Image 1 (cartoon, rainbow, N blue to C red):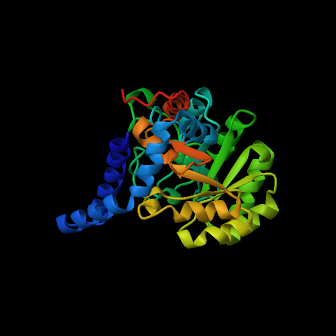
Image 2 (cartoon, rainbow, N blue to C red; image 1 turned 90 degrees about the horizontal axis):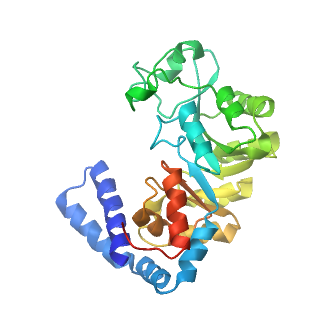
Length: 307
């Protein structure tokens, strides 16, 4: 079990260093630091293994399961197919990224460009919504999804209404952008089933006024922003796992504000989920919400054997 968590943390560090262009010396030094500074985490995991109740409690505490860009391990990300799959597998929320088209319409796409997930290239905001919806946003994932379209926010809100919480990752800032999001949610969605992913303190304050029924997830840029976002009205705060390499201080700071803790996962595997549960999050995200749900149930049942 301890080896499982160590392997997961090692993969994260290696990935971070590779992205930064780290050399072998840097990697060795970083790994030495990791071994020294993860002792507390390993002790916590050991306590989970030695008694069934701690792991069961941690699994039960993670009540929010967010489908990242929809059920993006099974369907092309940020499409209605991915959103529908998230509903089908019982995720409690589905996350989508919200952008503005050339003609001022809100649509769902993660990247700033069309290159990776459609059959077109270039900045997405250079196209009108009508043009965007003529593109193929599914074939890159699998030929079975040829012709899957880029959805509008209106379409996503209608699909989710009354079925699943809709988490809006707001990729832009500005009063008109925010007000348009609110108009669409009020007309086509359900405010009380909306989670607004805010990226600035002014935006958090604005949505607390414009859409008070909605919950807020603070997508904080740095650890030092925890308290400011909490004071602005965020209900839950995302902490990047890489911020926890050195110590658990960011988690303690979130807890001190009385807010809920969100951590990003990816695969929903046992290794990954156990490493996340060390920090006892209230909310987890995954590309594969069905697998994450099953893994959390396994942990709750005390089934910690790798398969």
